[in-house]
Length: 287
Picture 1 (cartoon, rainbow, N blue to C red):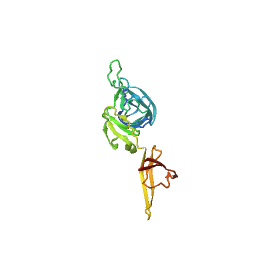
Picture 2: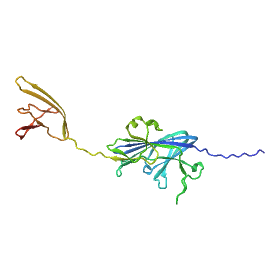
Picture 3: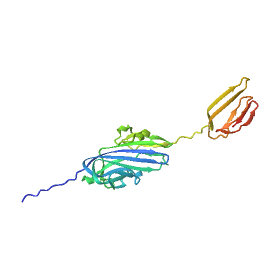
């Protein structure tokens, strides 16, 4: 009899690298987060992608991507205050996969700080047949996840609010649009307050309100005066004033000596003047 040949089958392990571009748009009524996530896949196909975000995004992300079967999130554990997201596809994919996650949150009220989310891409080493990734801490189980060896994170901040964004500490390295690993519309980059590559902690910006300053209650922006002098020495003058009036009911005018107003129009409608005697040498009329 021929000998029986045995084979050991080993599951191919995909090799992943990933990039994230977080678009943070600040308005007076909300802060919008758009997380553009892209994985590069080699050596084997995969149908599961894992990453973490801050816990204040837990349960608030909506996902758009090809062939999504299920999305789930759980606390990452420990003291990291992170939420771990798992996206499962209907079929394994190779080469590249793009995912868009969006969330809208109310503007910050207490600290008045806007924070860009820190995203950490991970791989499930337990599913790959490896030992647990992180050693067990006191009273805690070892983590079955490891960060990807190659990953990059970028942030694009757009401010359309009535406040000024002031960076809190170091926010990252300024980059150009063509350095972003994911294509971002040029119009968004043109509006951006900052385009950054983040290598450390999550960048923050504080909201600075501008102090309200009272403007002039009324102003004359243009005065067009036309004077006609007769042969007998008498004269007539037409005065056309362009006025920006915020709160004044009357406009005070000081007329030349021995002169009188013949007619008055306000916004092309006939009006009248009221004379005020302040001292013997001045005569002021209110329109």
